[in-house]
Length: 329
Image (cartoon, rainbow, N blue to C red; front, side, top):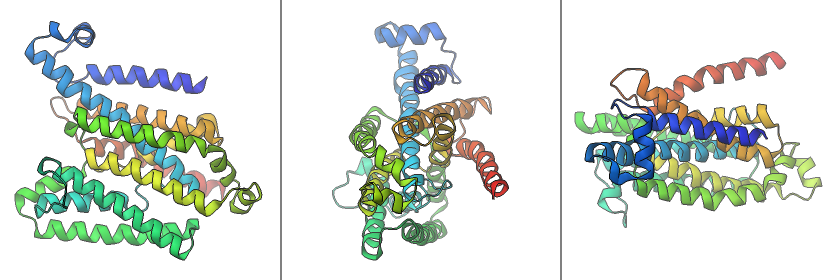
């Protein structure tokens, strides 16, 4: 029942996001334009089908991907403060994008029009594969993953700063803007790729849901149920890599959705991952759509990069979470 209510809330906020913007497109015009695009003028068609609808759909898809990845990340690391960016994946993507923006470097096989997104995806995915290899080589415990992830976080952060140091004024501006996260980069091709990634990964996440629930009771308890804990962590990390890499590559760095979404879902449906995983995905979509609306309405006539808005939403929640943990301790 709660999941149905969350789905209804996502649908309502999605419609509100579709209707929000600087142009005076009314609700009836938008509804009519969705049903019969030929009735719209050329300007109205561009606003609805080429600007607002791709951005609104991308907000939902990115929210689902990051929050689902965040729920799995918090479980396999047994850390409620973990998110897809804890292990440095976002900084790896930023470094890949920076290689394209600042140096014009493209990895072999990546088309020129996919230079930035392609580089970001390859570096984000490669960093996770490296993390998996290191964790498997030295033991795939939660502590090992966190330690290697922290090391990669600082390494890629230093590399991004090096790119910023050598960048020209114009490329520096582009790199900084990319790292802020922006739904304006959305188009139907990118939405199709991200949706396909979610459709590919989500069934495997749900298939592992009872094992993830058992893992919340501790490694030894999960092993007593027959769960191969190290194998579960590695496969979960692979799913996190796919979801996070696609999302970050297409819209840039967007923080806190993967941290906040799972916590809201946990408060609503509890620790049973059969409900927690879909609940987290819906909460992430809801937060991203709400943030998209806020990015268009906080300053009239200006669209604030959505990464800034999600940070403004996430930081107070993060501080509240830290204080709650300290109070309970």
